[in-house]
Length: 146
Ligand SMILES: [Zn+2]
View 1 (cartoon, rainbow, N blue to C red):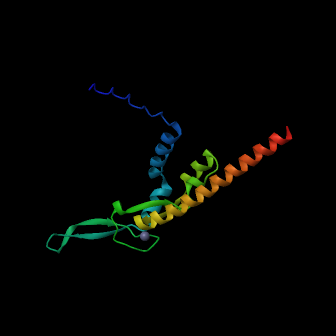
View 2 (spheres, protein in one colour):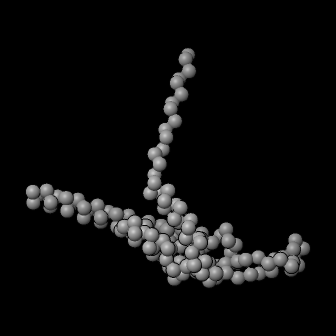
View 3 (cartoon, rainbow, N blue to C red):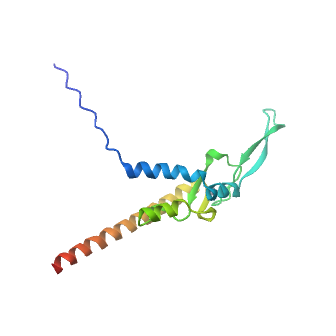
């Protein structure tokens, strides 16, 4: 039996908007607001040696502003935009919400951030559905006017 021809690899179209958003999201980590928020619940603890005694090194830890869980290493905290940036109407608004000041951020543990994100996504979907409905009724009424 002949070998089936190799399917040509699908080339994903370059999504400029998604790319730009990723770059901008990364850039927030260099802003004063982000860093000030990061420092809000940050503290140092002395590290422990394997034998349980205090070592001369220290470790940086954070506290979750949602549930109050503390002793969290950096890998277990996430910066949350209190006002979900996905709820922006325009690109300009998205950028303004993205680069918020310190008060626009929450330091959350994975659990709290996950819950917040589920809720945010629900709100974003509601907003998009309302927008679609508004656009379709506007289209329908404009075609009646013609
Ligand atoms: Zn938490």
